[in-house]
Length: 312
Image (cartoon, rainbow, N blue to C red):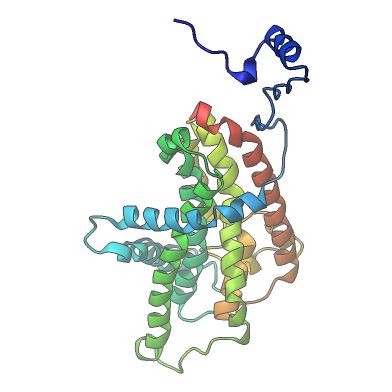
């Protein structure tokens, strides 16, 4: 049983025969490539497609809400778990670093308030870094089935840390309100620069992404990264000014110390809430360091993005 040859692939002989019978030039078939869009993976370094991210902007919130539900699903105290670690480390800071080591708290009284406030930007950085760095591996089945900008996954995973921060802020507010009863004296008045607190929060969040994005890309190809990340965070909490103030460093070394991605955001956060000494030089170096690391991290993530579905 013969089948008709589709016009789009009609042989040249049939076209000539049609011209002879009709006396008119037969319409030429459209080339096979007409109307076909070829998608080829880009090679080398490329920029992040901001327009594409905007088209998929709803996915940031959808994935973030999904991660929040998974994080606290079937837990007894739910989001209150966000308070356990900062309280535990605050107690550790008071007895080990506050009394035994006596590293100082920039004159903040009581001491536990210094350590508690210091935990908030650190926890934002720590949770954001760990969540974003594991996001691609955790969603490996999704990466193989559907297409969407892969940058959505680490960013939305890091957004969970903002929910923890909101819960922790409630604890800090209660402690500040209870200070006259617990410690005596007048109530703590927020300094004028508290209006810059959103800047400190965004800064710490971007610092987490500046480290988490390249680690997320590396974690897809080298699964050893998942074992390296806990070592990074365990070391960073003591290297960062969480249990001690940067004012303990000699002049000139604070700017060098600002190269550590999380150091300057913590100091700036503490200055906004507790009016601790300002370190503009350190903040400037820290801001430059954060944006440079974030730019490099985004570029590396974009370079590796086309390989995620094949390697994961």
